[in-house]
Image (cartoon, rainbow, N blue to C red; front, side, top):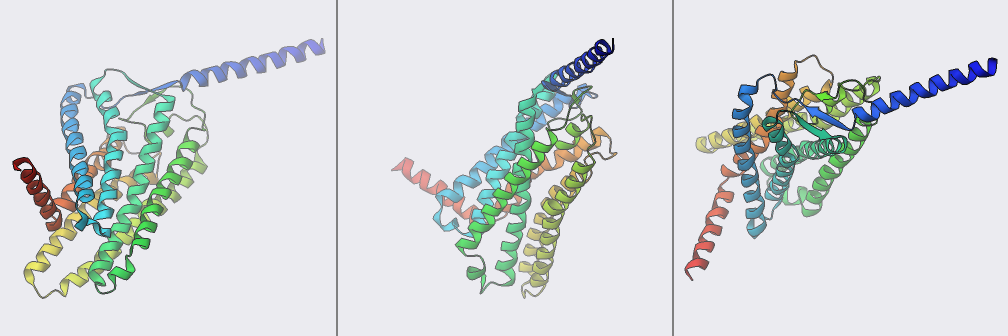
Length: 333
């Protein structure tokens, strides 16, 4: 009798474990992305706007990459940093926006477990790389403006390569650790992600386990990856502004202030919204507020950076004119 009861107990436990496991397995086969389903009348308009932004972002950044690649006079750290940033922005947009457009254009948009993992991985990879790359670009401008005579020594080819490699490797490491950790948690219950794409905070809300350690890691990681580079950028631009104030030309000061202000606007938009999102993955902001904050650094920043860093730059404009004249000359020859 005792053996029979023991057998039945084991059978019950084992059976419930299999049932639970099956439930978990089925729940993570795919996720449903809700998008702005609470505002169906707006989703069509959003689709059109987001599609235009996506195309302009790709075309703008692709032009920057191509122009810098073709013009040998632009093969200096400042423009090579910009070229890397444009590659990051294109990749960042490509990892997010197509899925976002599907969500806005589909009544019930689903994404597989593997697809969600891949999207989160590339968002973190390119987002983390951009954080460090913007910091390196601010340091480059600081060295060029505040120490013009020693700039070729400070920012030589070896230093440039180290900064670029550090940015990309750091992005890969952040993405690998964080994505693997998030998807190692058990997922049970509902599988609806109240977001436009697979980002860490909304996915984490589906986890049915204690995430305290991960939240500590996320808080610490965000400070190191987002807040620290942002503070270094602010410090660099503060030094740059002091250098600008010493300029004898009023016109030169105004132009430099305008350029610095536009750079800081873009940087603040990116770092500000990203830090608010990732410092507290399970924050009390409403889902719609979180979506809007995500749009700020996933849609607007990749669109604004090419405009801010290149169209206001004389050398880039000169390179565009030169390439256009060369093309016309070849066609008329």
